[in-house]
Amino acid sequence: MGVLGRFTAATVGAALAMACTSPVRDYAEPHGAGGASGASTGSGNACQDSQHSCVAAAPSGWAGPLLLTEGTPQAPPPACIGAYGKSQGDYNGQLDAGTADCKCTCDPAKGITCTAPASLCYVGSVIQCNQFCMTQSGSVPPNVCTAINPSAASYSQVSGPAPTDIGSCKAVPAHTLPKPVWGVAAKACTAAADPTTAGCASGNVCAPNAAAPGKLCVAHPGDVACEGAFYGAKQLLYEGFMDTRACSDCSCGMAKSACGGQVAFITGSGCNGFLQNAVSSPGCGQKNNGMTADHALYSPDPKGTCDPSPSMLSGEVVTTGAATFCCHTG
Image 1 (cartoon, rainbow, N blue to C red):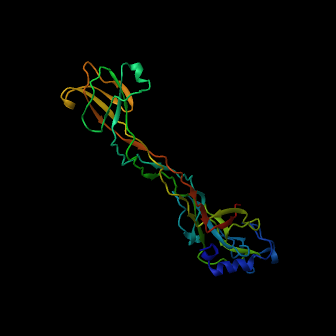
Image 2 (image 1 turned 45 degrees about the vertical axis):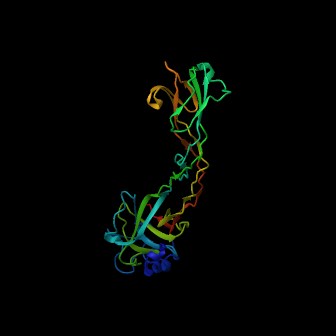
Image 3 (image 1 turned 90 degrees about the vertical axis):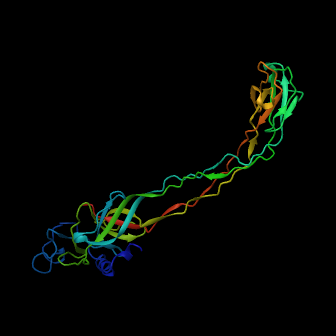
């Protein structure tokens, strides 16, 4: 509901009837002697007392006067009580939407299969480990104890196979879409009875004095300029907000996978003999360590990664139910 919709027809009607008359008066402005100065038409002053004052009527199309009290969401303003005991709604200001970030990640690849054998190439020294192997000395299928040529060459290059199936990765959203938060919480309150002109000059109304920390204000829907000097301090507040921000779906590219693992070189009794060494795949290392290896066991350890797709941010945070409050600060 817009700000004018919160106020009674009588409140707005009174403002409309009195706003287009002679210049308004400030608090405690002395009344002139007689007639158009704004003195009461009866004996004495029917408004100016310790609890009431003659103040400017709301301009045409504005609601008020009303009491606007501010706080924070953590320390909200008090309820409408006392002379201004009728609530006209809660408002908010200083919206912080935070910083949105759309980001995707990918879990490690799953479903990688390695069924091809690892290749062995025997070399005679550690220096030759870093040289290109021209001749394959043997191959070892995965997870099968395999007899190999018991060569006197002390080192072996190990080349792992390419995966039979590279597998795939699961996309994981890692978005940051913070909930917008208000910095100001405000409450608008009016008097139980509509303002009257009794005891006030033309263009003024009799209103209860504003209780600190509240401010005497008039209100208008939307973002508009203040009218007149008496209610000259503008504050733009809102009833709420809409957050339509969203991130596009995440996906993962083709997996970059390898079989990895290692080849164990063993002497005697098949693969239950003495372990000479284990060489990573791909890699090069010593296969004979005091004894000549005659069996090998290849144990793949497949791993893979994927590149995540970019995720695009759409939508925005917009305030709703804007209301302009113009307040007296004297």
